[in-house]
Image (cartoon, rainbow, N blue to C red):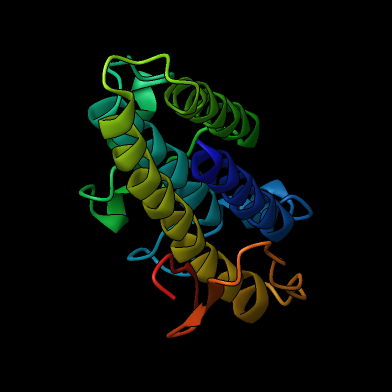
Length: 179
């Protein structure tokens, strides 16, 4: 149980770092694409949440999408050249917040043993949260590159973690439970 709660804190830390990367940008900067075969920062924000919901839904609980209209757009199987028409920043923010609430609710139920197979789901939840955290950081790297190199904004400092296993690997922040 303690590991899941600690991982939820890491998930929140990763999401906070994501927010630090984009919250001070203008709407135009969030939706701007360096070229047609790239994705806007806003797409990455929606995609991070889409994957989190998809994984929670398919691995721990069958829940409907909080915003079904975004599912196709935020799927990475959708070629980059078709990722241009983004929803508003407010809608993306609401989507991200709703998904994070669902991640917390479901993982909280697992940690509290309020599920049919608590030990099995604790193992699944541990790996799932680690994957979600690393996926968040994976897309943060791209957001960082566009923020700094293309838009000319200073990057925030890397997040500080209670876990010694948060480090950079190949330029990406990674939570490595095996380190």
